[in-house]
Image (cartoon, protein in one colour):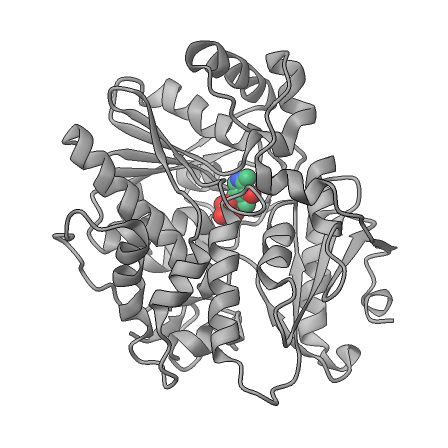
Length: 420
Ligand SMILES: *Cc1c(COP(=O)(O)O)cnc(C)c1O
C-alpha cells in the first residue's frame, strides 16, 4: 500500500516514510491510496491478531521489513472492552491504557514503529508534541526511556485538568514539559514553527506525533473493526458508532475501518460547543475559528485538521452525509448526561464520553448503537465527582502516575524560549 497527500502535490510514499515525515511536503496529510477489503472477516480472532491482519497490508510496500505483529502486541497490551448497557446499546471503552485515554493506542503503536525503524548510530529523534490534554501524556508514556528518542511536550497553562497536568509533567529523563502561556492553538503554532525553522533545534532531528501522523491513525481502525464485529455477533446488527470528536483522528479510524468492510452502519462525529464540523455539515462551508473552552477540553478544537482526510476521501458532501452525521452538545448537557447516565446505569463517564451519550439519546435511542468512551472519568474528577456526589475510583495505571514527582517549565509562546 502506498500513501498520497490530500493536496496531490507531493510524491506518494510508503507507510514508513509517511510516519517518519508526519506532514506531507505540500502541507497535506497522508492517506492510503486504497483500502484492502477484509470482509468477510475471519471469526473468533483475538483483538491483537485481528489488528495485525488489518494493519499489515498497509506496510507491504515498505522497504524496511516491519513485522507489525510484535509492535501491535506490545502497543495493545490492555483491554478494549465493549460493555453493553442495553440490549443493543454498548460503550466501547478505550481508556484502559497507561494514561487512561484512547490516545495510548495510537501513541504506543507510533512509538513501536519509530523504534523499529531506528538504526544503530542514528541521531536522537526529538518528538515535539502540542497537546490540549491527553496527547502529551500518551506520547510521553509511549516514548519514556525509549533509547534514541526524546519528547518535548507543549500544553496550554491552566487549560488542562489537574490530573492531566500531572500526566504531562511527571516523567523527567527523556521527556521535557512546557506550560505555554497561551491556548492550545498557540502550542500547535509553536510546534509548527519549530518544524519550519529547523535551525533553532540545533542538531536535533525533529519529528511529530500529533494526531495528523498516519502512525496514530492506522491502529485506531483496529478497535472499530474488532468492536463492530463483536457488536454484530451479539446483536445481529451493525451499529451506529458515536465518537466524541475534536481533531477527528479517532473518527477517521472508524471511517477507514468501514472502508475495509467493518460492519458499521453509520458514524457520528459528536462535538462539544466547538461547532466547526456540525456547521460544515449543515452549510457546506468550511469555516475554522478559534476554539472555545468546554468541559470536554480534549475536544476544544476550532480547526479540526483531520477533516481534510475525510473530505479527500469523499469530496462530495452529500456522499459524506450518507453515512456520517454530526452533532454539538453544550456543557450543560454534558453535566446532565454524566448525572443521569450514572443514575440509570451505575456507570461513571467522562465529559467527552458524555457528549457521545447525549447524542445517542437524542438521535439514536432504541437503535443499535455504540458510544465511544475516550477517557477514564478519574482523569476529570474535579468535574465528575461533584456531579455524581461520590469519588471516582482511580485505575491502577493512573494511580501510579499520580504519585510521581513533576517538573515543568513555563514559557511564553515563543520559539526561542523553547530551545534555550
Ligand atoms: C483527543 C481526545 C478526543 C478527541 O479525539 P480526536 O481524535 O481529536 O477527534 C476525545 N476525547 C478524549 C478524552 C481525547 O483525549
